Amino acid sequence: MVSPESVRRDYAMKPRWYASRGIANYLVLDPLKGHVVTMWNPGPDGYRDRGTLSYGAELAVDSSLGKLSIPTARLPVDPKARS
Image (cartoon, rainbow, N blue to C red; front, top):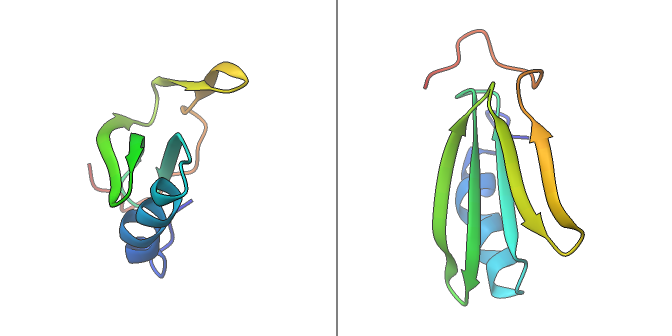
């Protein structure tokens, strides 16, 4: 979950670190923008693929546990959220 203080860490630092360790998926829940950023296909320098989904839609993520469905309609949104 992104906060004003963690934007750089959540969007730049963590994805590189997780991808370099082979973590298959990385999700950024961003109440400041009202969307979820999904990253997949990890490589040594970061994730090769990414997508953005506005809050309100259902997010489907393939995982080692099977397909996970995450409803986003009830996630918190900053009142000043930008799309």
